[in-house]
Image (tube, rainbow, N blue to C red; front, top):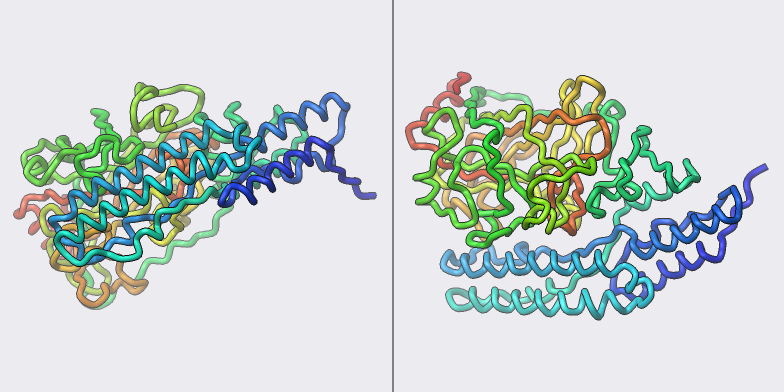
Length: 496
C-alpha cells in the first residue's frame, strides 16, 4: 500500500513563502527548493519539527540569483572605436552593480521571506535605476560620434531566478535520505558539510552540477577533412602557471578596470597582462612561453577545490570578496595547439587579435555563446557543457577550449568582443566575408579527486556553473613566428 503524504504546517508555510515571493518579487525566485519536503517523512515528532524548521530556513535562503539582460548584446555592430573606452567602462560598472545587488540578495534571505516586496524595493528597483543610468551614458557616448542607439533602455530591468539543479538536489537528497545530516550526491559522495551541496561560499556548485563521465554517451563529431584542408599543427608551450600569476581583471572586456571579472584568472604567456595593459605593454612584456616569439596572452578562470580550505585571496577582490573560495588548483598539464581548417588553407592572424570563447554569464544569458567542454582523460570522446565531470580512479578532469577559427579580415576586436570572429559551420566552412585562421585548441588537465567539490571561479551571481567556463586570447606572436605557424599548418606539418 502506498504512503500517505501530508504537508505539515511549517512545510506549508515554506511553500506559502515561496509563492508570495514569486508573486511579489518581480521575477522567479528559487525559494521553493523544498516544495515537496515534509511529504512521506517518518520519525519522532521532535525530529520532524527540527526538519521542518530547517526547511523554512532553507526556503527563505534558497539558491537564487539575479538575471539581467546582457547590455553588450544591445550595442550597435558599427560602434565607433572612439567611443569604445567609455562604453567598456560603463559595461564594467554595470557588472559591478549586478554583483553588488547579488551580494545584497545573498544577505537578505530572511527579509525577503518576511516581506515579499523587499526584493523589488531594495534590490531590483535600485539596480534597474543604476543600469539605466549607465545605459543612457553609453547611448550618449556613442551619439557624440555616430547615430545614437535606440531602445537600449529596455535592457535595464533585471529579475530574480532560481537554480533548477538546486531544486532537484534538494528534493532528491530529502527523498533519498530523510536525514538532514546525511546529504549525498547521486554518486554517493558526501557534500563535505558545505550546506546541502551549495558550495563552500554558499553560492554553488550543487551536487546536480556533476555527472559521472561513464554515464555519458560519446558525443564528439568532428568534420571530415576535404580536399584543400590544412592538416598541420603548431604547439606553443607556455607552462602551467607555475609562477602563480593571477588577477581578477579582464583586459579585453573591461580594460582599465580593476577586478573587472569578479573572479580570478590563471595566466600563461604574456606576464605583463592586467587591466591596464595595451598593445604596447603586451608587445614589450615578458612571456612564460618557451618560444620567446610568442608573447600572446592566454587566460581562463581558475579551478578551485572547495574542501573547507581557502587560498591566499580569501579577503581579496576576485577571491573571497566575490564568493570565490577554496584552494586554487595548478593544472597538471596545459597544451595550446593551433590547428587548421578541414576545408581550406588558413591565413595569418592579425597581431593583437582578441578572442573570447564561451560566456562567463551563460547561466543567466543562456547557452547561445557558451562553449564549455568538460571531460576526463580516457573519455574525451564525450564532452559536457553544463555539467562538471566526475572521473573514475586514474582519470583526470579536462577542460577544452576550441576558439573561433573564422575572422572578418578587418577588425582585431568588436563592440561586443565577438562579431569580428566566428565559428565555422558543422562542415568546417567560414561564413561569407570571413576567412579561416589557425584555431587555438586549449586543453587544461587537473588532478582532482572524484568528488563533487570543485568548480571554476565565476561572477558571484553565476553560481559557479560549469556552463560559464570560458577562455581569452590576445595574439602577440611575432610576425615571423606567425608566418611559420601558418606554413606548418597549411603544409600538413607538426611544429612547435
